[in-house]
Length: 346
Image 1: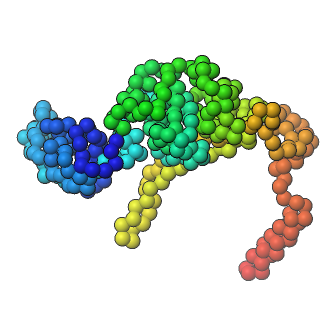
Image 2 (image 1 turned 45 degrees about the horizontal axis):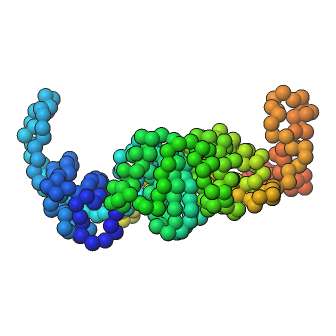
């Protein structure tokens, strides 16, 4: 997709009205975009620069609403829209999709935490509708390569078409393969991949092939949506021994209103969408360093099955008593003084 110059037929553009409502459409000679306020004529946009304002023309409602028959003859038009090329985030949210896409807030974190840069060789599994793929293609650039593995052929077709529409052609530095991750990864060179991004149901079952193709020090980023997936993956990474301690996080997004003195957060926000688990590959023959845990620490036994004495001992083992006896005595003395002041004040 061109980043500058006049708008050309075939390009995607974004129409935004004064209320902030956006419509993304592809420019076609003689084409129109239907809005709730009339028709936007593409010929008024083609050949112009970004940042212009176009006005809708009159259109009449088709069909008859028996409850409101007057609407069939109500003319609409004269509404203004600002014209811009969509940002990649806008394009991702508006593009046709088969699989559920990853939100821009999570995609940005994948790029940053995965340290995905120009010229790198990246492998992605779970191309879906191509949202993550487009951002990875932009990040590695034509000097790098992206190998995307998608198990479903129809999803791969959607991803490929969305990429072609975004770039105006099939990106030459993208190799989109259809098949199972393990089977496809087995055909890739050993330790030649800089970064791996897994957006799939069971990434813990893909660690063997992921390590085989990953260069030492390479970054693995996994996106999962549930806590059970997150815990299972983290445990497997630790058990494997060839991956560093996993870093786990989620990103919450909240917009704000700022109009004169009325400054407040939006009533709605994009909260939990998924977890990002990040780990790095060790060199062959070296185990990852782990934090030493107390030998007696047991986080698996059901505490309700223990006796009162065993339960008290177990709570201490689990370090739930994180306050020293000395600090506790001081807290009690302070509380005694403060509660005593209540009595004096009556």
